[in-house]
Amino acid sequence: MSRRIVITPKAKDIGDNFVVRRSLPHLTKQMVGPYIFWDHMGPITLEGEQEMKVRSHPHIGLATITYLFQGEILHRDSLGTEQPIRPGEVNWMTAGNGIAHSERAKPVKGAITLEGIQLWVALPIEFEDVDASFFHTKEKDLPFFEHSGAQLKLIAGEDLGQKSPVPVYSDLFYYHGKTSNDFEYQLSPKREGAIYLLKGEIEIDDQSYSGHDLICFDQGENIHFKVKGDTEFMFFGGTPFPEKRYIWWNYVSSSMEKIEAAKKRWKEDESPTVINETEKIPLPTDR
Image (cartoon, rainbow, N blue to C red; front, side):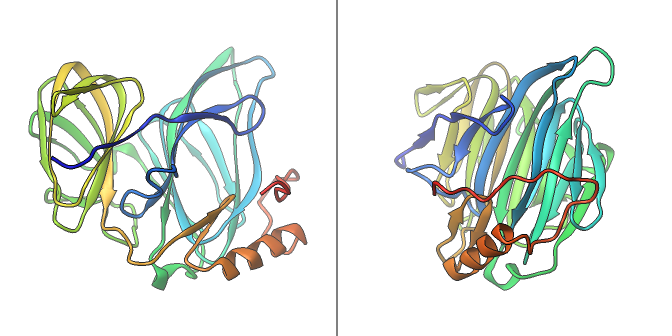
């Protein structure tokens, strides 16, 4: 039995009283495979004039994956994309050598409840400087199947004979799963993984987990958990990179020099601008 790393997310206000639960990066575990950032947004209910406003901000060296359980968010970026995302759909944005984007939501009638997961996937060193791109996937186009008594939706990557249409750059997998039975899965010798609990309680090696724990597993590990009631979870991982990744604000790179150059571009207004946006998040000064 390996030493189990369990991360309890920290609540963080990302602006306008919109609170997320952040699990990665963490002092005990910076990355799971190529995944370097994990935010559980909401649930939060917006009413009247309330809005979620994640103003224009930049990225390099990563891809973002947005997946919603409730609500609707409007994505805009410097490529000219303006794409709403709804529950079960996927927005995959490749930052590569540089992109800026914003995310907004507000009630149309009455109130709207928002909840979802946004994560960042670090790009392999040979793809860190690719041109930025954006890809949207409808829920009906994602593989949905059963494995070990669980209903699994493959959001991104390739696994168990299934392949998501989302265009990834490295070996990874990302599932939304539900089960009322015990679950078993074998990680490949190259892959590490993690399970994030959305609902319910599970038992692994006689230890119980609930709430919003992120439970990490070593490469090649046989994962078996006992379910206590109906359980809903996110399951993700992949092959780790051989090189270190630096993360500063919204930037991820194998090179601190690239991050410093990106900081300079944003500070001096030399980065791409986002379609139909006038507000931007300034470069932090306290980092």
